[in-house]
Image (cartoon, rainbow, N blue to C red; front, top):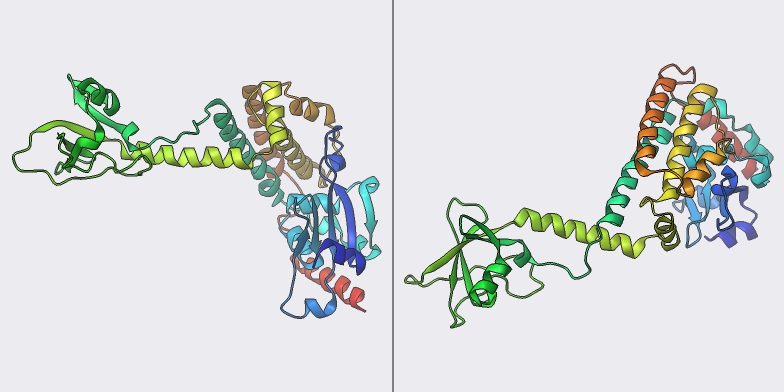
Length: 350
């Protein structure tokens, strides 16, 4: 089933402009995001062909099946609570039966986690992004040779430098394990191509061992920083996966304001923190933002990264205190939600 099917079969119950335009945080370059609710035809609902969600390829248009919509409301999912409380000027269509879904039975202290802790996780993401921006990883991948060291003059020398001093090639080296010495190997050398080399080829992810003649002379001890290479491989993959999948326009915006953080991500982090505080104090979801100037100032990179980190800690403390003293319900009324889901579906199918 596609979005076109939903429209042609008149299955859409709710359709809203969401995202930055609903928040009042859009700028001329902002896209129009659409979220909504649909109902499966009765036959498909009662068979094994249940479809919880339908979206377009870019995921900026998403419709949730009625049952999934109510299920996510019971979890106090931020996106779904925002959809339920969309400003009237952003509602494109709405079935009257959905007016029976009452926020007072749904908003609860779960929002401390779903809004607040999600915002904190975004801060961690921002730290990781800053690290990637400031510490780019070279496209040419290193191999184990770059993590090998030789004991040299009461210290250690990188293997490649040591080989250059000796005018040797790693392909002519042979390694053997040194018992009871983790990641330390005896190194041997021969011009006669009798050894396997330190690695078998430049794309190897491990060092090679060789059979050593009994009368061969050990030239040095080699230390292989295996753990360091493992960490590097993980960081290499994470960095180049990020480069491949990053939103290029947001990345260019990050570069343009020169503060080395994803300003849009940071803006939404503070939006979520402030919404969490409002939920605890006011007991409602304020989708349209009254703090627009502050949030757009973050988006345009007017704040230093560390200042925002410090302010986020203050907001987090305020949020924790607000929920501690909040009078909102501890958990959503799941019994009420089940009944309203059944009631709405039954009447729609009739």
